[in-house]
Length: 262
Image (tube, rainbow, N blue to C red; front, side, top):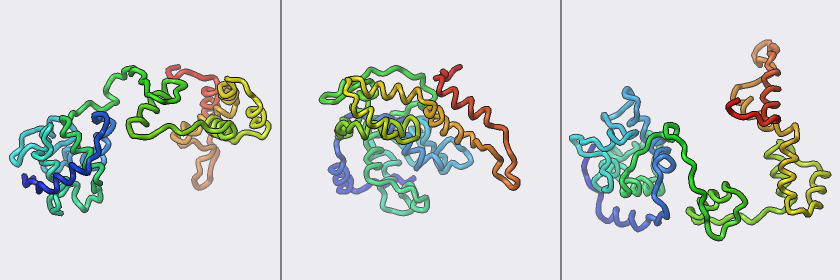
């Protein structure tokens, strides 16, 4: 890898274009997906596909001393070879290479730059980290009905966005019915909900839809699709498959609220 440094004007222009970010980057949330999509194919764990003997999927490979220099120097993007390659205008030097069709846009470049400035922290893949219950945030000037609302509102605040205004009741019942039952509400259901002026009318509607047999059918769709469920084999003679008992079991399990570990 070349150790050529980019021009100072380019760096200054890039710095000026970088908006300030309220919170430090999270490697697994912000950085790993980008590196995985653009870099790991040639610089990942697959030794047979690895180019230039460089690994970027772990800190040991990224921080290793190399003849051409260190790929990533925590806190110093300008001296990091990966950054020099990213902003290079030489088609033979720039990374990802043009023929990969994986070009980084300005926002993605900014993200990598900021990550290196912050110390280029690597973390284990999230699937290998024991989950911890986070503290529920208290975002200011937010409408919060439950902990999920608090986390959503906090992320919106981080990204400079605001909560949408509360939907009208006719919109709420339609959304809820499609989400939980996969069907639009009946005119009678809409009328009953609009006429229900009690403070917990929405909560009662949620409970009623969760108790509807259609709820289990709606929730079973992704599971059946993932398992490629079909009542026939769909090929040539299209012979019958007696898979319906499993289908009914999945639907019934949702309607009975069977626990994941049962």
